[in-house]
Length: 168
Image (cartoon, rainbow, N blue to C red; front, side):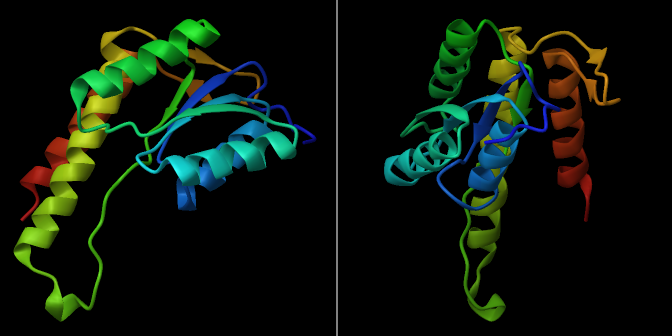
């Protein structure tokens, strides 16, 4: 994997790495030089992502199953990653759960399930990273990217969730 290097030396937590955007993020972050720590509910898909990242020359470990809606499971995943790698620089909170089908067949219960699970998983992963103070302090990298500490990241997550809940 020929790293471009924008994430050299960074530790990135990525949720939902068994496929889709989570897998793509894991591959991209590793290609950019990050050490990736993934998690997912689906062990087989998570293992496939680890295999793909490593075969391409990247560094990745993963835990599965991890239910991010469970506060203790989310905190354990974050704490283990921080202990193994000496801290965390990035939290890419991608995990979600969905119900799909023709629009006319989806119910209000389906909608509320998706919103609830996304909200709970986002809050638990963000809270775990912020509360354990594992996200490293704010700084500006050479490429101009701003990295924020866990409290700022958590505040942003909470503000986004509050905005979603107050929309008609």
